[in-house]
Image (cartoon, rainbow over all chains, first blue to last red; front, side, top):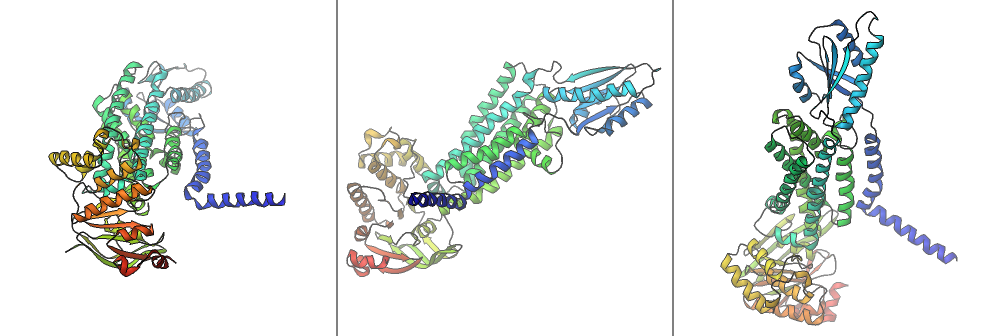
Length: 360
Length: 220
């Protein structure tokens, strides 16, 4: 009986050694819980914080100014700037990540809400609407005629629910096809040993990667076309420049491929690649891109990290270019993030590809 | 005339000194067996000769780009015999006409004519090894490097592989074969023995070790 305890003990001892000596297993065992805790900790909240709004006071009303002060004092709302006339509403939505524009008119207070995300739109409507309603109730003398509150959803006036999931679903398809499938293909080439033969040809590593990536990119163009078809099918109007939108979608596809390449270059086992692709690419982009939960209001270091994800950038571009009709000038921060991901992915991948060829 | 010259080559993967000051040359038609226990530095040395990794010090020179065949066949298993030949031939810079000629030659020599359209994964390991060898020499390299080419093959397939190696050597190609089968040392025209990254013996099999028992001494 004692012998069996010793034997079981030996298995336990071996398993611990096995885990701690395999860096990828360690990464999976210890990084995954932390990643999930952080990701879900930030993501699993429908509450809207740091909601940016612009205000407009064309009549220069003192009461309007009091309302703006009250809005800014609320810890969920931040007044980011002013516009002079209602003609500038689109410009206000194009900057400072504004989710609403409040206009104090002669007879009514108009709240213009970005309707591209139905979920966020509802939240903004409830939050700003409640503050304005409170102001009217207790911030204005009873003798003064109370203005009516009117809410208008821009870019998606009917608050069609289809507008919300489409960017996220498109992003999900590209993450799977361009990042994970492409990464698996590079990994397979390494395992089969054919990558070594390729390295012995006159092709440089960059030319090799380009040759390997191009078919996946062309296939992803079919998916880009499918994105356009799906928009037609669901009755989603692309009000912006279609060519620009599709070009940015193709750029997103390349940035996903660079992420897949980065992991494939440094990992040898397909199972490690799949698990880490899920943890490091799929999960963060799904949960922290604003697809399922509002994250645009997360600021600081984690806000910067979240906004450096290609998924977050693409979601933003999708809404800005396709739904709001913005141009390159307004969407450049997101385009820069996509380019940055491509450069970073390739730069990290290249030494990995060289090193792993040397070791395998 | 020498086809490859390896001069005082060293490589360290900290903290391991994988190869330490190895020098030798390879002549025309020479079949040089690179022998050593696991971890002796054979694979690292081969990869430096193939320019897959740079040496920390020393120089490697080969007459042209060497042909290379590694333990895992390196063929693309999802592609057919025809497609693999075309793929690697194109990568090695062969013209369309040259490719067609080489494909016919290879498939006839390996009895693969009827399997031209068959995916490589459906072929037996003997056929795959033969095809892999043929792909490695598709561009007629002057130097051919074979990293454990008979690993995992049965006795008949091993014999066939050595026949192909000698045929190639008779055409003037200088061949470096790494192996850990001691009996295969005697199929080579010269031997280089590595231990802990150092070249400890170099010469004809008779000079280095007249029989397997004396060869074994180097591995102890």
